[in-house]
Image (tube, rainbow, N blue to C red; front, top):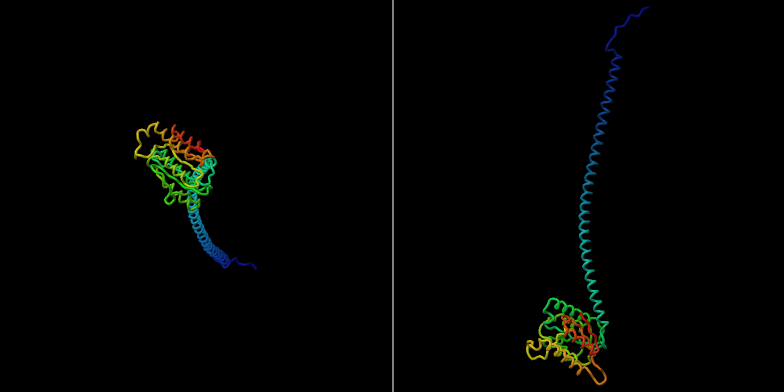
Length: 301
């Protein structure tokens, strides 16, 4: 029995099944792509937030580093300043060490019993006429102050002189115990001195030798003695070379007469510390002879 050929149907059931299956696949792909797109958007947003957080952290780190850099720069400046201060302090200490060495050399050279000491310091105007002389006078005061503070004497006094010779207020006619309070008072007295007036070396030595119990005198002077007091100004004779020599000889003769006894060549040791213009022929020779003739030493500053 012959089958009759069926006519071809373009939109048959099978075709529709295939078409709907294809459409379903496309819809599935579309839905999947939409879901993954949203997920990717979320991922991108998260990445963006993370990157923004990293950026904020990096900016904060940059600010922290900038602040640290400023801090380090400030610390560097402080260290440089500290270094300069330390260098200045080192220079100051080296200067003090040099001064102490100079003081120690002077102390080692001193002679005498050094138990009952009278310090005699010249403050006449000749020590302040020139800038260098003024500087040396200040050094002289500092040296004397250091010795007053540190030397191991038992009793002492300080005689300062220009036209007249005098001691600190209330210290007349005696030696005082070398207590810390007396030493401090003497240092303040010495540091207050200013160069002015004539040079009455004779009067100063008379006053020092007259203090009961003195065994050592230390004379700080530029070695420029003047004649007996009679006028407020130097006479022409006093200003001459012969006048200088005569005034120096009067003092040496006085010491030979009053600083002697029957048993000893000298009773009080006198050392001389030269300041100012002690290199002058007459002045320097005078100080050296006073020290030599009275058992002391001559020290040039």
